[in-house]
Image (tube, rainbow, N blue to C red; front, side):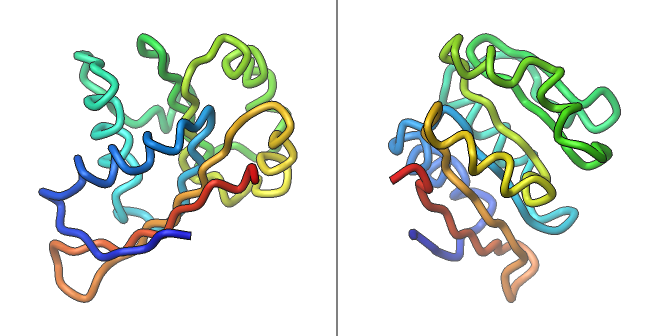
Length: 140
């Protein structure tokens, strides 16, 4: 497991480090405002996505070229995410980022046989512009 404290202007480096693990699924956890969507934006930018990336809180899912962004904040049952076509997204070689993934840790972890999953935990740092991050490839 990798962990560090970073400032907002260092998010690009963190995105590159996570992408270097070649994930199919990035499961994001952390409190409101910890930087889940900010990290998603940085990852999208590193993938060369030019679209403006916004959190899909009220529509659950946004699709970008090569990236599917799911927000599980309002999802009560994992079957809602499955109905979005999660397995197809993985099979189509899209990177899938799931915010609020901790709600479905067991179900997402069960996808290990089909996907490389990187679990990311974000939290506030001691200073206002700092964040703490831990991430690991749980597929091994």
